[in-house]
Length: 140
Image 1 (cartoon, rainbow, N blue to C red):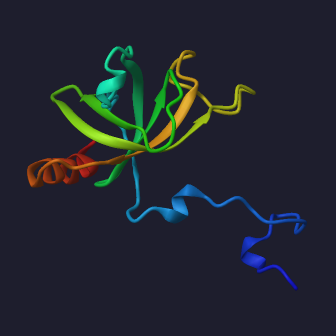
Image 2: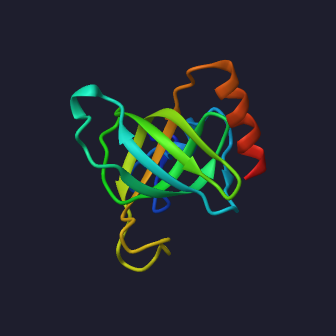
């Protein structure tokens, strides 16, 4: 049995990890305007949880990438307050993935406290919210 060459590691000794970008339905754009985020867990049982600060790195009409100060489990439903220079919006999303940022100095972080990188999928509550995100995804 042979391995498909497209799934082999560069050294040819094993299989590559799946890249999350390969699963995306839409391409993401790097955010050029500094946008802060404040995350809070949407679950009523966790309402006493302190808000989590972060910074947006990339965005699409269906999701957002951020650096944050805390780890969140996959599929956690959260509320996001997205703050730009001229806007502030509250949105709902689910954590698609969350990984610790390597501390070997290979990645420049926005802040020393922002040690986690995560991808969030928007959970639209209305058509207006969907239209707003489509607009933001091309304007930031």
